[in-house]
Structure formats: structure tokens, C-alpha cells
Length: 160
Image 1 (tube, rainbow, N blue to C red):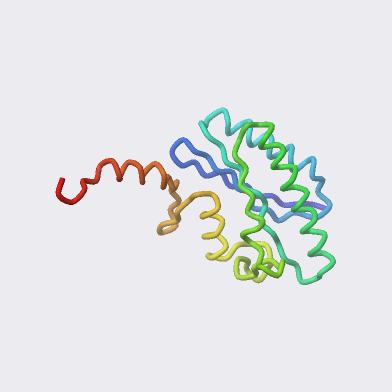
Image 2: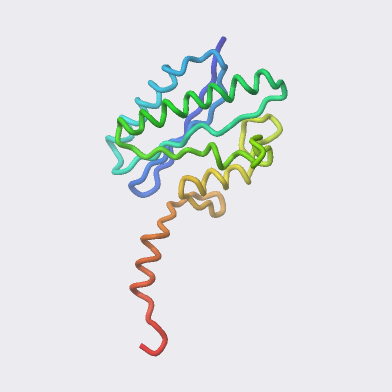
């Protein structure tokens, strides 16, 4: 079986986000996936001061048996990614819980009908998890705390 993998790296200022947009067969070995991430992280660390790796978002398949296998694979990949990120000293953002409903099912409002690709709401959720703001299709780093502190220092209080 063959697999398709498409990765997207966003460089925003000196902060780089690695997103793995995946459409892969269940056969692909987790070790191979993690090795690819390790290569991406190593390359990215050479050019960035901070690296953030996003977990693979949940997927849904019509066939429940396949859906369970895919979910298990994603959970294994994400667990391995979390360990890799700790070892490499980079930030890992786990999106899993924010993509599930209270009843434990995947929020299908975040996924297109194919059960793989994100809707606008799903993309917005992912961007929020990563600390990004999407404005007119343009990504920018949300540095709320930093900007909040700066604006608090530069704003004059009434009567001052």
C-alpha cells in the first residue's frame, strides 16, 4: 500500500509551527512517522528560536472498525510525538481533547464530510490551540501576554 503525506510549515517571525496534514494508510509504521517528524524538527531547530509541533487531529471514518483503528494509530503517533518533543526540547500542542465532544465522540463539525480534513471551525480551533489568529487567511502569532503587558505599560490611566 502507498501513503500520502503533506506537511505544512508556517514561519511566523522567529516561531515555526509544524503541522502534519495527513492522509496516510493505517499500514504506515509509527516509527517512520516519528522519524520524519524528527527530521523536520532537527531542520527547523537549525533556523528557528522556537519550534511548536501540533498533534495529529482526530479523524472519523464511516466504517466504525476502520475509524477505531485510525484513532488508535493517531493516539500512538501523538504519544510518540509528545515524547519526541520532550527529548528534542520543543513545544508539543495536543489538540485531542478540544476536538472531542463531552460524550467522547469526535466533533464532526470540525471535519469535512471526508472525516479527515478540517472545516473552517476545525481550522479555527487548531489555530487557537496553537496560539495563532487567522485574519483574512493570514496567520500571525498571538502574543497576547506580551502585547497585553506592553499595552498596559503604554496606556495612560484616566487623570494621569
